[in-house]
Image 1 (spheres, rainbow, N blue to C red):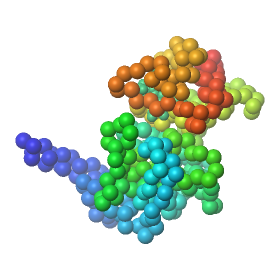
Image 2: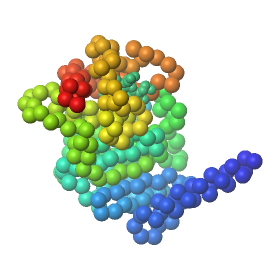
Image 3: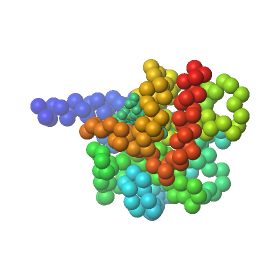
Image 4: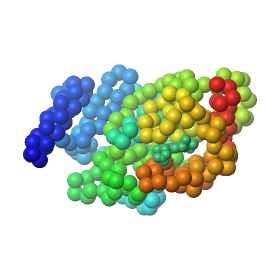
Length: 284
Ligand code: HEC
């Protein structure tokens, strides 16, 4: 029975691999059971096996002072994202949509992942090495592998939402503001209005999991625009507490949303996100 199950699974994986193989450039051996990474720009896509990535000569050991997912210092075998994205065309106002196998889906500005000049913030793709399996992520089932975006920064800290683990695919897309009309701000608000900043933080920090009025790619949290926007049913103090630390408001074993402390989201930015949600509630 068990053997039969395994054979069925292998057959299913082979079908998936075949479908992916059909979409990639040139002839490439497909390892049905090995994890794959797909990278697409507007011209086409390319699929890499873990073995391809581990044999890249630019693979290196890197140290991370504080890994926000593993909550401490770490070292990884990793490829510079700039190397991985070498042949990929991405405009400076475009984004990479990064999709993970657990339905998380982050929009990261293209110049951050593929900078034109040597940046003070550099992204790497950490690759789990067969000789050193990664531990489970604290508080979760399973680890960050096989592919995990990590950052080295001498400048401003990179939002934790850009430390995408279990990465399956990168694709070049238009900016979320172009793709998702429901994020639109119709009124001529002054540039100093916190609504703009709030929308920007909402896209960077929240949309990996939450959609807004149906727009977005996040699938792991509820839509924060419809049927009701949280500003309609959460008191301001409870709303802020929930974003800072969800379990200070409600708690249950399957709870998933991570909290955002001051190092991730300043008080002013927290107020700005709520200003944005309030604006959208009022302006429709
Ligand atoms: C990694 C995924 C993830 C991210 C990132 C995330 N959330 Fe959540 N959020 C969830 C999930 C999942 C829930 C449902 C409750 C749970 O399982 O924790 C939730 C619930 C909520 C709720 C409660 C809705 C309700 O009616 O109960 C609010 C409000 C909320 N999130 C706001 C935010 C805001 C604002 C941000 C960005 C600053 C954010 N979330 C970022 C996953 C996420």
